[in-house]
Image (cartoon, rainbow, N blue to C red):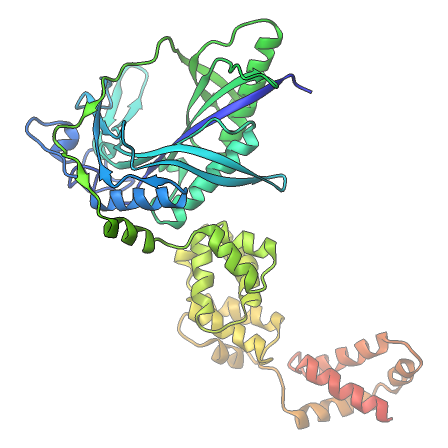
Length: 476
């Protein structure tokens, strides 16, 4: 057992979904041709003035509330002064002294145990432009310059890569469900910097902090931290010093790699942004932003359990906001919640995986899926037959599930007189099975029902057929 304990804090940058950028009217999109969605302000042309994006402020309030934070009722912005190639102005507009939210927390669950992670602050700022490095030159794409960011800074309350991973998952879930961001780390919509240090157990003296920059997947967060903990522990056990430095995670070697050594803290010479006066946020404005927020995953989870879903089914649904929204929309048409959940988790998801699409592009609407499920509920078709109808629905987007079932000859026989005729013939030709059943051989009943299904070409209502068969053979 190690004599050291890891001390881990995270800074998460969330790119927000807004129509325009944080302080300019340029479009906020992903994947556009380089340098085509840029305003003069984004490139720091002289005389240009910033204007605060109202939706970005609303988004910030919603995230702060979801993280149980104190929300500031005055919006202040500051200048963070430094020169770097991706920052054309030579400074970044951010929030330093008065972030929009502070003193919050969220709860994570690891190995069945809940743990509260304190969050120091969330502040609003603008993103920098994107650099593409080549062997002897660098290209700059200003499309990203000025995109609204929410930076969420935790306290160093985590002590393992697993805990940090769960924390990032929870943050991503919150911003995704609030529709503040799509949370796609691979596209840079959510970026994570990690601070890791080791201290001796039962000691209050913290070790030297190492920063790992720009982790681009949740699995990499865990892998990078686990490696860094092992690296620092090996140094300390060999009586070597841990150096304060910035590292990156190399996915190929599965190691953290030195980027630069840190010395003293950088003096960013913060001062209040002179071109954006403080903005008073009314109680009504803040309250409306909160009240119009989307339902969060934890709330959905609780609601799904009350509907009778198992914890595993509910967890699978809430793990993907779009799937959960599709589930909720389907329930509006009065289908059985358990059957709907099972179809989305198994059959629908199987199709989505095969086609490599999201449920937004799924060709069957929630209303049509519910119509199919109602055919199962009222015993018009069996589960097996429903899957045949489902496959046809994926090709025929206009015909109703009931009409498709009729066209395919899959509608179950529920007419008692018609079933009795079929069952009478089966019993007449299988007298030995009746004798076997009366002698205690229960499998004989299954055989008889199988013969009924065969004679009816699989269209006999199984429950009704069983009832009639039992009535008939008990009378013989």
